[in-house]
Length: 481
Image (cartoon, rainbow, N blue to C red; front, side, top):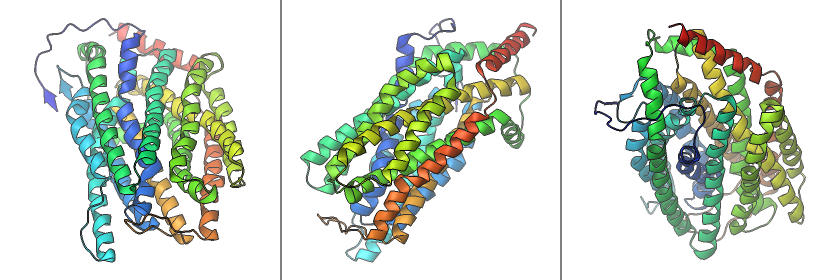
């Protein structure tokens, strides 16, 4: 993308602190991707098996194919955003501006059930390929709007604690979007009896909100981004490094390897838990589909509240200890869910709240570490490559999501899970083997992932003091130019 139009607006000075309006607009940029991603995480697998009538293994394969393709193209989009030149919008914003509407359209198309044939088997395979194609295109546009957004964090501020605050706004909208989508789901599910119409209407509402919020972000942070761009362009541009050499540099950055490991294990636990919870609530706890959003709101509502608590606490005790405290509670909750019985509803909600405490640190801490890693890379190489680092973060997020959903889908099918017949009003009764598989996916598997994340966090090398030294050396380098 190259936009050579002049920018007549005067960009403000790039002060260390961000004003509330800019933080709010930046946070809004994660509302649309969060709503669409969370609806997909919580309901897309269930939609495929219980509405479209696709077997669980095939449904998991649909999601795996889309996410692997999406993950593979992430670093390339990240590299392209680093090289984008636009006086009107900067490097990141053109992608969000032009990609917002297609992003909304293809998200919506995932939630309809076309009728291709009267033969059930033929129609099932036609639906499979329809969802594969739409999923591939949808994930491309998710990358186009979300990856440039995530890469803007270090461009908006270089202050260590201000970045944690900025990410708090981001994940307030992210988790808030998740809660909003669940509230909308609960309202729609309770008011509309037809299961297919429920998801159709929910998709329409979420699409509109998502597109509007992306444009709020684009116009709200534009002045700040242009101020950063003006400063960046004035500096002497070092020689470019070939793409595969950049990959080598990225993966020889030791702190970055720790961060992507922490994030991968944390996000894998989030994805597996989120995708299996609807099955757990309906089949193990014997509740109705309309009760699923309530349980999820307990998790996400707690995570939203705790974001502010952890953000302030991290300034006093550091990111690593905050991560340890949050994850410890989540591990206890995840392990306990395996033994939960259908008459222990109060205990289920207590565990949901405990899990929410940990989920908030899975959102906040790894993303607060990445800007520090980027500046270490700048100190070592002389180049700022936010796009390539954030590209690999999003790549791993999507690999985690794809692998988690594929694992859940195929585990359910191997355990004898019975999918619904498209158009059928009642859900089939599941065998004991399928119920055991659901319990394993909601408890022990996420617990193992979280413990692995804790081990990596313990050895993460960048402290507040080390980051301050990195920034000092970068300033000295700029002064001496």
